[in-house]
Image: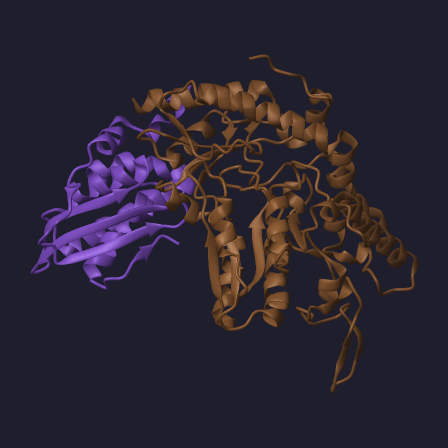
Length: 151
Length: 411
């Protein structure tokens, strides 16, 4: 009966929710930020080690729903080793696709693994879950060191 | 468990609520988010339509026929609320936007006049944000202190802890009659007796209690009581502040404007009498009249019959929920209203909410505007099913089956 929602709750999402990657405190991080979704109470602490514009390491801690946990986990996997600029561009693409309308033409290929989360655009109430980690990353890269909120 | 039948015809009642007969995601709607807001029966919808089609005009102003007719309808809604709460006087009923505005009104008028530096306001650890933030704002402005009475692991107020926080500096006690996040019904008779023994007035947040139990403000002897129309099968944007006449009379006016004045010159303004002193500007006319229709509707069924039916639903839902090993109930007070707050092992409430919606089941997932309650139970959020007069045991079965499907999906 719940099969219709498999476009959002794909096996990859369950996998990352059960076993989030890079789910650890980073002792030698030079960027750290608290992300918060006041709507559902999700909290994330994002750690990054950025040297000469390169994201050498990124990790997270926190509690959230399956969508936000899987999104954070996938994000850390993908942006690790990217330049800040590459990560920024990917966020823009991800944001455009998750907040776009259903009929909009989207280039899912460019998203790579992140494409599994594209289905969230059909569930507007959950888009913030998918983008919390990304907003946190963006803030961490800007190094403004404040708590980010999705509101 | 046997499923006792309500004292009213449930099939007929459900037919009064047009919104209930739809499908959501190809499943019949199962609406279990009544603590957030209730659906509206036809008589309420018709009342709004009738006002605009036949009776509408501004109130308390014109000498023409429509203005008189509309004023009569508006004021008869006040009488209905007065009877509903068993208030002594009609002018003790102040129309506001909702419970939140009612509490803010008391904080900004009674509070500003009577609360000074070092004084204290006492609330409890199970309050909705709307019974926390207005007091924080007042305390910050006045240099006063907000005191919070503790609760137990079952979600009950610890009366000894409450008593210990009553002091000679306490200027007001403001507590929820029934918790929106936990369902707990507070022992307000004892709370009021303890506060009154020290001469401290008590405000009851009745947002959850008004729809689910008989409220008699004179028997309770509460000083203020606030509730919202939209949780009582009435429209949103209309609510009530009840206050004892002596207190309301002594309170300064709140918002300035038309209707709340007796005489205005540029030098000085004389304020109008109760209740108009607190009702500046053109009120929410149609929704006030429709709130009267909602009260008529509820009275025709009987508040006690509704409470009994909801109690059965809660008992049945609780029994079925306890059979699910992965489910933890949040809020297990023996004296509870029809709210089932729960968590599932390793599944976030937001995921539960989205997945149940796929089955046509509407529940609330989140912190329920009670973040301190979530912190106390060390959960980021809960899932909450809350019942209203039109819910059925079959719907409880659909919910429990849905919960099992969600658990299965998460493996």
